[in-house]
Length: 250
Image (cartoon, rainbow, N blue to C red; front, top):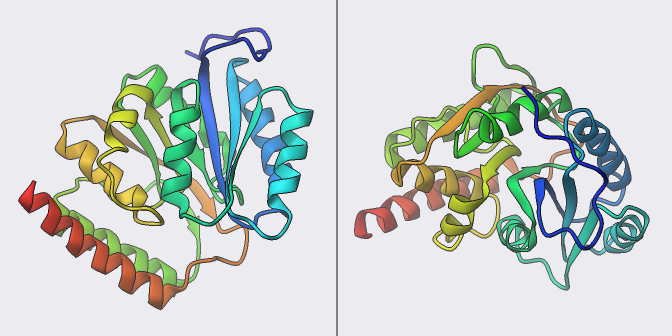
């Protein structure tokens, strides 16, 4: 079963089946290729979509390239940030301005193989889940990354499950789909403005009783990571503790 196909959209359309958001900070080398590849993938099962570049105060020409692509493709939108406010803030702004019934976000390096885009979206649009997320921790997943990053990720997800009560195995995979209504409600409660946004929205979704599906993926880092393993691991650990404390008081 696939999403309903529609004719090409124009500016007068008020809704779309799918909105795909790419958060972007200094991503000029990845931008055009990612847009072209995700467009090809989406065209295989729906004609009703938009692609949003949530550009977050870039300084390397990403903003200019995103604007060129938005002028070239009628289904594209570029949301520009004058200064860097964080990936979470960029996603919040993009989702609020989107038109899709299913909201998707993924990283521009396309580390997750796009053959999983259709099952990710259909988990929400067809199967009825409120949220869906790619998981690098499932037995069926195929993942290529360093041993150090693998240990760090497993430790982090163990901490989230045991401190925050999550049932999920992987919270930080940049490959997620959301049903529009609960997402727009939840993002007003999410305090995280950068990397921890992924974890907080999934934890809050589960606490609200929303359904979340994890799907196995094939994942391979497509670039030199922007994550500082030691600094960001420390900061993420602090945010887990801070969220645990906030949730106890809510």
